[in-house]
Length: 144
Image (tube, rainbow, N blue to C red; front, side, top):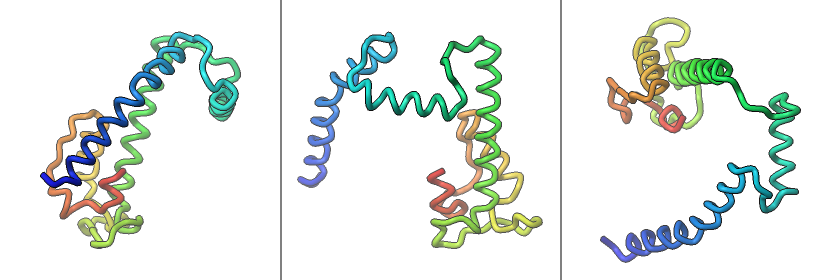
């Protein structure tokens, strides 16, 4: 390994070592509801995000609300992933002009069965792939 490689490892280790304790203390305070550091800055950001989501008074979810939220999130993730793969020919970061098969108006992307199979696989966290990513997926699709 080169000197540069060892230097990067050492610097990364030192950065992780330096932020572990303060970040851990901050997370503990947040999760326990204690007084937090930087309440003005981070409090404003948190209240803004809550207001953006339509929550005036944050409260805990019931298990049914949580299950519904998880299902909606998973379905939305599946749809977004599927659409990204189907439309990859017209999306940015595709210098190799990766395309799919000719099967209808979305022919500029991955074929429908492969796109759905891959999206469902990533949504369920099985991460099964029946393709070679470097010859099928664009950079944008891989990043997403």
